[in-house]
Length: 273
Image 1 (spheres, rainbow, N blue to C red):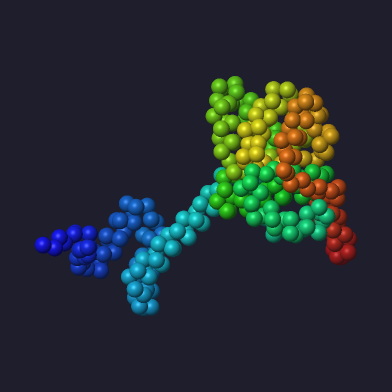
Image 2 (spheres, rainbow, N blue to C red):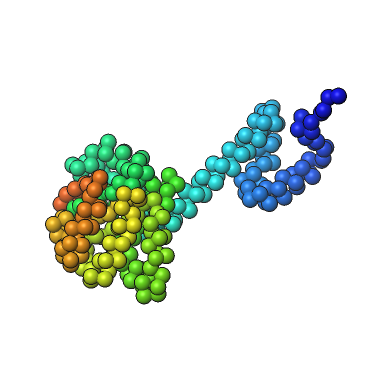
């Protein structure tokens, strides 16, 4: 006797009205948390009928729309979570002003392979030379690619760590920073850190060493970092960790902001009132 398996039986499909079908789609999409399916199912079904799509092709269309919209929402969420202080884009950065940053190097950094490899990035240069722009823009690009990113100034991070230590929450905060794919640490060397703050910052750097990337910007050469970290041995250890397998870019001494201001003044002098 032949044993007929229920697995070979086609699933039962019952006939329902168009109105009932639409209502069922709305309920199911809400239950499954598929907002794009809920919003676009009817319109896509009508378009699919006009194009005589197969049921499988229509299913592919609606699921692809849901995935695309979910990816877009995730990119927006990642960018917001990065907490960048302002909007900066790599497309707006003038690489001709930085001899140490040819377009090919910028394209490589924008791709994010260095982040996946856990390599550091150090930007060194005077104020107004584009370090802040690059740190924010690279962080934004990484976030839009789905990576977990956080921008923070050195002073703000140290203050957060001190408060966490006082509240006996330091390990939790260090672990949170360790989970980031990219930590954008701005204004290294701008403020003097007391020994406790310097040691707490060192914990963050050590927790990410050779595992997760740090992109930092400083207006001071490495030889002057001892003034920030007070302890010469600690300063040397920080430099060692941030430069191992690192991308180091000198942004120079010519200020973008000063040049832009000069051009504005020149235009005002040329154009009659």
